[in-house]
Length: 146
Length: 146
Image (cartoon, rainbow over all chains, first blue to last red; front, side):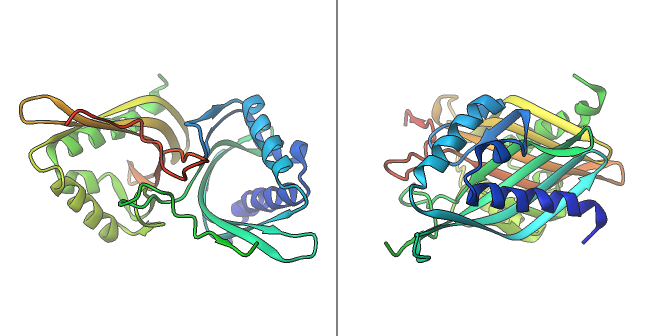
């Protein structure tokens, strides 16, 4: 790992920790105020941290009694000067209070980051999963054991 | 427009021209050999220009007697040193030999670019459209007049 990648991969660790703790403030602090998000679900884009915060708070609330454990795989990082890009696969696992895996979902995620006042902030996020040609349905590699 | 954005927006113009001309070589020349693509359709990712070229050639062949006109909207560009990110909405319109619009599809696109030997090349592309929560179907803002 190159030295310049370390603080960028830390953003992924902070993302995981904030989701597990359902900590809206910690999660939103990863993003720039002017972020534009292309989220997988329901809407073409969200502009600005206020709009994104509403989505995040609602997502965390939906976890109910489950914990959501995030796992990143095959991260590719490019950074130069004060801009960086990460593209990575993400698995979200819903874990019951008893520790059983209830569901899992795979996404693809692209993050663009901007270093401002020495800190890397996400200025753009794009999440998706591929769509089946025949059915137009999204492929989630989703397994439900609930 | 900042001066540094001009060659990056030119990449979008070159993309349009290559699709309209169905010029596989010109299209593929926009990408770095080590590109990783998160394409909207059918597969989680494509790694390397050879795999991506197959997809592009097959896409252009599928146009048949239609021309595909690409339109970009609301492009946001960030560049620093030798790395850049563009996120943008894309409309693909299928136009008949007689000039009638047969279909159109909207996508969201994120491009990461890397300047190598003075030229900007796409090292990562991510395209998608949002997915409806209820049906798990992709929303294409698709209108068919065929």
